[in-house]
Length: 254
Image (tube, rainbow, N blue to C red; front, side):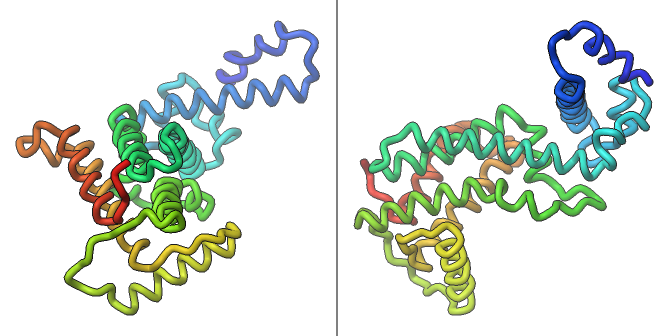
């Protein structure tokens, strides 16, 4: 097979390694190359990604890819997980770079990191937050990495609440009782699962979720060209909107 000839020389030239270790190393390199090529193919084909197209770009038989990804969905899941993990790592690093007591600064850092990552990785962002891929259903193991950003934002609000540093403005409408019940379930589930001691009021979580949806909605508008001819000062507009969301949550200025 063509992929064997590509990597077979590694078996002959690398000394001092056991066969299983070397095999695992070559397999990992092949998987990484497949994902690199698949991301390039996504930029061209979008939701029409196929193993056959990826194999053609790599110059190997499509059947060879099945050794690494049994189906297109398996490859898509790998790309999605990698995308969420990369985005989550960028947001987590941005939050960690700001003083813990600067709640607004951490909020804005997370939001800015999401936008920066999306602008640097528009194809990957489109896979994560664009139109659903026909016939594909993401497995449950994508849920946790997909939740990293909203968990970071809720952690910031929880910390500010515990420190008595949160002061949300009053709203003209009350949170509907069914929505309040849904949010209470989410709060209790996370508190139990992660052994959290600080509580987060339902109203505060509702505001965090509003900020989260505004964040990704605005980033999606920018990435998918919905702001063309409307807003040119996009970075300034983004900062303004994210500060409005911080105001809504009640995060103090540093």
